[in-house]
Image (cartoon, rainbow, N blue to C red; front, side):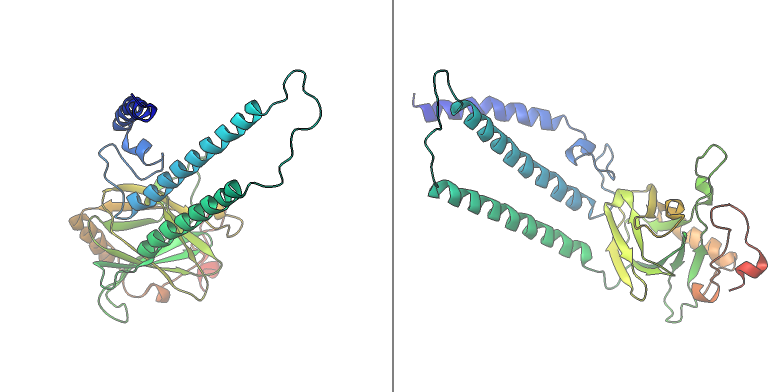
Length: 300
């Protein structure tokens, strides 16, 4: 049997073994151990699997290039090692045109490929929904978050909002999760978030959603997506923004549409309605102490 056929048959069990190994992987393993995935394979948002796919496939290509490169280095070190009885320098070659062309073309293909797939996915991520089911304004401030759930009125008269304080550590150092600002989102509904900052640059990061976006003074950024799995997700500021940056935490609760509407109604009943700018009070607690701000400090 020709050697080519023998090689082909030798690869069959390798392919079967690889398929068996991959079939036994959990969704977390198949997605490169990134957050945002559970055992049933449901992604956190409609874009999460796309982001993890770019990550995992990039690593597969890079590892393949690494294995080939390391293999060639090892082969050259063994095949051209100095043998017993040899002396002097080996024959010196000035260049090898085929190899140099290969070493130029292959990296160029890799760079262009990575750029093309990244640009494709980034275009999808940055495409904003024109008529979302839910429109929210998220406001970063030193060192917490405010969330406004916008309605239909242009003056935001029918909007509702919450204002948050920075994370409050308990005596043992744990963060009091009940005190964290919480953003509610309805599962399966298109969401568009306007990202604003009150002061310096912040970065809005929901970890399991595998995406973050900066909040820049005097500029509005936007993020559109669809939550696809109910649950509670951790969020934080991902841009060093001052002394208590590490305390700038929040939670995201993805809930049913009915629970989402009930939550908005609870804000209306609490009188937290209208445009948050008219009710905004930056110093709602003394930074870093967990204490309450005085009336004079809060009256701005």
